[in-house]
Length: 182
Image (cartoon, rainbow, N blue to C red; front, side, top):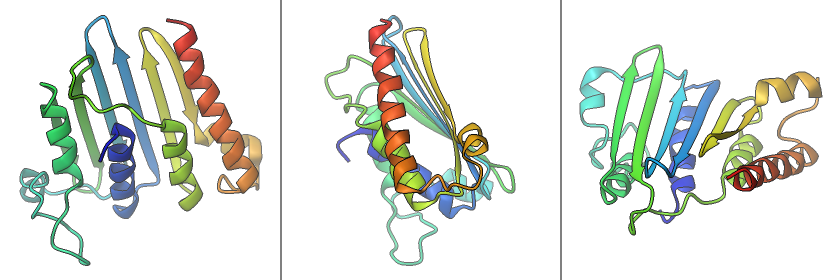
C-alpha cells in the first residue's frame, strides 16, 4: 500500500467484518514533536489473547477465502520503516484499538493520502456504520461524527449519492482548513 489512508481503509474494513457499528479514526499530525499518529478503534467482536499475539503475522488470518492476511503486517512495517511503531489492544466482546506512530518527516513515511475519499468509500458501502473521524494538525482540529449527520438527515441514508458528495466536500474543506490555521 502506498498511502496511510489505504492502511486505514483496510483496518476499517476489518472492523466492519468484526461486526463494528462505531469506528473511531483519530489522526494527529504534530510537527513540533515530529510525530504522526493514527488510532483506529472499534466496538466489534474483538480478539482473544492468542489471536492477538499473532495478528501481525501475515500467515495468521481469520479469512476463510485465503490463508494470508497482509494488512496489519504491512501497516506495522510502514510505521517501523520510519522509526515508529504499531500496537494493538483488543478484548473479546469489547472491540479493538490499533495505534500506529510514524516519524513525521522521515523520508520513508508514506503520504497520508485522501482521507475524504477513504471515509466516504467506507460509508458508501456500509451506510449504517457510524464513524467518528478526528483529525488534529499542530493544535487545530477537524471533527466529523456521522451520528450527528444522521440526526440532521433523518431518514436519508448516509450512503445516498448526494450525501456522499456532500460528505466528501465537507471533509475536504475541513482538512484544508487545518492547513490554513498552521
